Image 1: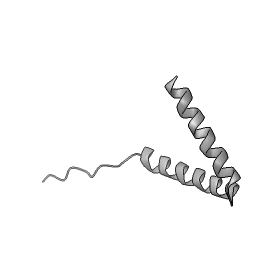
Image 2: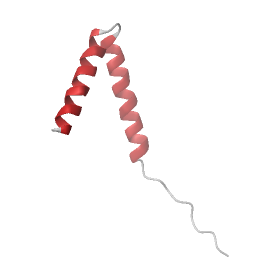
Image 3: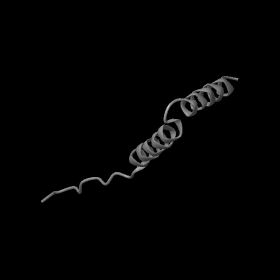
Length: 53
């Protein structure tokens, strides 16, 4: 039930953004930014090598 309410809330906010000024462009820009953030978070991190003599 909680997931359904969250989904409904996201749907309402998305529709509100589409109706507002510059709605489609703003929604596309937000989507691209979120995808970029996901790529950065999921990127593998290379550790520094152990430098021992």
